[in-house]
Image 1: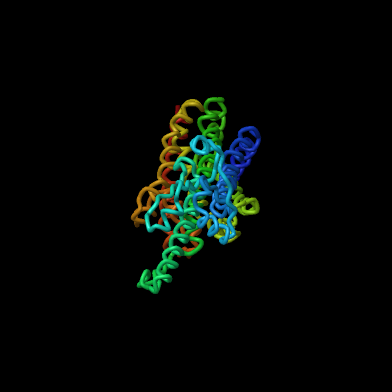
Image 2: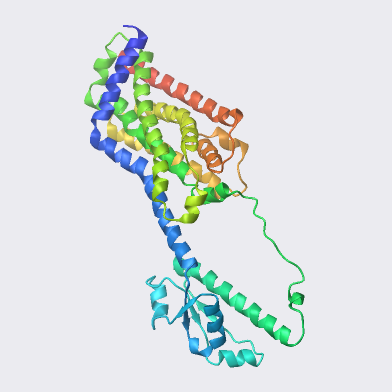
Length: 390
């Protein structure tokens, strides 16, 4: 039997075995493929609730009778003034109330007319995110009311209001809409990378330590086929499963956009077929490298559980490496492209920002993954040779 035919026969056997375990496959599909889109939808729902709180037309005022001028201003701004519940402070702490409360002290209007500086409280809870988001809206209304009162006072005294603003400030944001969206959706590369890793994990462990535990590895080694052909067949099956999971994970975010509830996120988050294909192109060498690495780790183990325990080192490293770009606020560094998982996360973040990737950007991660793949396969072939001799 030629090496190509032997590798193809082993490949078909391993693919059938990997797809036969439907329960494990469904768990991997749910935890790896669906978790990212579900989190994206949940994030959009959270942002939608913040947007609704920030854009609410209702202002809750405690002591509205003490400030008729302020109430008139709020109503002219098309705001609806309502009284809060009596126990609003307790409800804010318990997160049962999601709106800030404007507390007006007694004699507020009289103090303002006398030229005094009374104090108005905007009551919220920093542990209550929705109430905290609405507090900024109330403070902007109060600032506008204070500016109107000051302008009227100066106008009555014949002083121009332009003296209050000797210059105008304009803010210019250099970040594009996609860059701002990437700050929110920056976790997507992490979920895709972990999907590839978990997709390859079970197949890699089963085709090495699993077969050794079942006693089916030794009969396979008795075949006259070359060890390299057997390794290529097994690795090809594991990598195919990882690539399949990668494809499903990358393309799952396209229909997930239809379920986004946040208008802002839906407008900024632009993820289509070009971005999905770019993700997949970056993940192909990574899937090949992780498949070979997990097989190299598992081939040393005598049981499936032992291989699972040994592979936790790889799982922990791959899950922590992308966080380097989160904690390092200095931005990208050249060495990021030399580290697997971190390089893919960095380049996928560029794709989300709408930046163009050049061949030089992907060349370094591709070369590192290729070297890691070759080293892992050579190690697996060597261990199989030792097992055959024994």
